[in-house]
Image (cartoon, rainbow, N blue to C red; front, side):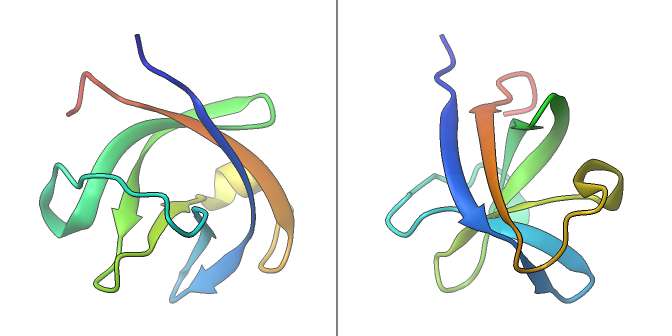
Length: 89
């Protein structure tokens, strides 16, 4: 069974992306190149397939595509959840 992880965070801009950083201390094991881990994320009533990213310093973040975040911007607080996408692991 795939446990859902839920967290609240403040969005920030990373180059051309808007990302949701996971809480400090949340550790995942990257399973794909470039520190990516496939997940199915949910924001409100919308779910989408994406990947968690882990940067070189070990911070993990969830990217929010423009079509998903709609009017949300950098500095907005959001609550997201995700499950590991076992089909893509």
